[in-house]
Length: 98
Length: 106
Image (cartoon, rainbow over all chains, first blue to last red; front, side, top):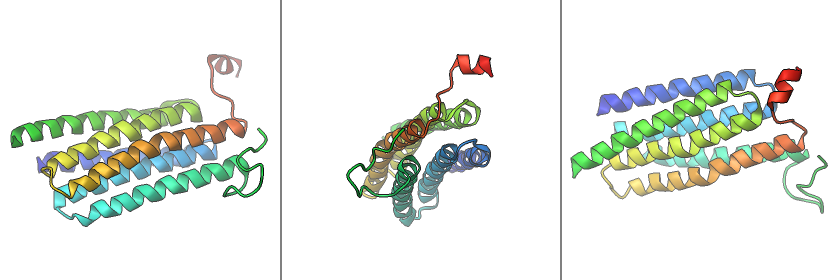
């Protein structure tokens, strides 16, 4: 079982590196954000797998913080690209001209 | 009981690996950012979610596995939200979705 888990974790890491190819080659900046987001989710999965395999329970807390950070960072970056600013100050916030 | 949990866990692990592989393939091969976000959100929610559930079953349903279930809930909320925010940003900044017509014209 442990061998299967190590093999799965290695396969997921290989997939994360394949996602980083898209982050390098993506034609728009949104492709790069998407690729880094997917690679981050795979890293989160690998962290939880390591916590299960090696028995380090604190890695689950690290994974939770990692997931929350990725969520907030991706939302902030897409909002910044969409409207040119962060936050919702101003009467027409989030309603940038198309 | 332990054998049943192990079998369920391995099945969830393989489902998750298949979804992660498909999502990675879609991220590399699909033509524009909307379809890539579509593939990647499936990859995130189903693939990562089922692998995390498999890890929670591996832990033997202890109390600490509640945190893994919490992480699954976080991913189930965050992956569609991320995909929607990306697609909205792309649409509002003027990216045109890929169609067969645009392929033939170019």
